[in-house]
Length: 196
Image (cartoon, rainbow, N blue to C red; front, side, top):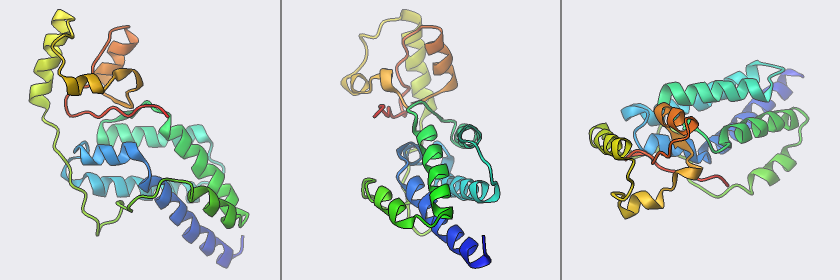
C-alpha cells in the first residue's frame, strides 16, 4: 500500500472503529455504572485506541485473537463479561471493515454503518459521561440471603424486570453458579443486556 493510501486507510479505519465503539452498549453501560471507576470513560477510550492500534498494527488477525483481546480488556478493566455475543460481532465487523477499507470500499462501509442506531459520540475526552458508582455492600447481603434460602419471593418488581436468562453482564461468581445449574439473579447495580 502506498504511503498516501496507508494514511487514508488509517484515518478512515479510525473513524470506523470509533463509530462501532460509540455504539457498543455493553461498554457504555460498564462506564455509566462505574465499573471502570471514576476514569471509566478514559479507560473505554484507551480500549478503543488499543483495539484500533492492534487492528492496524497486525496484518493477519483472526476473529478469535481479537475477541480474546477485547474479552480480556473488558474483564480486567471493567470486571465485565459480555455474554450477549456483542464482542464476537464487533470483532467480525472490525476485521471485515478493515479488509473493505484496505480495498477502498468506503461507500459500502458507510452504507452499513449508517444502519447503526443514531447516537451521541461519547468516547471523546470533551464529552462528560455521568456514572453511578456500584454499591457492593448492600448487594452482597441480598445475594447471601437468596443463596441460603433459595427463595426468590423477596424480589421486588425492578429485579423481576431484569430476567437473568439473557444477562449480558455477569460476575465470575455468577458464571460459576450458572454453570453449576443454580439460578442466579443479577446483583444490584448490574444491568441486564438481553440478546438481540
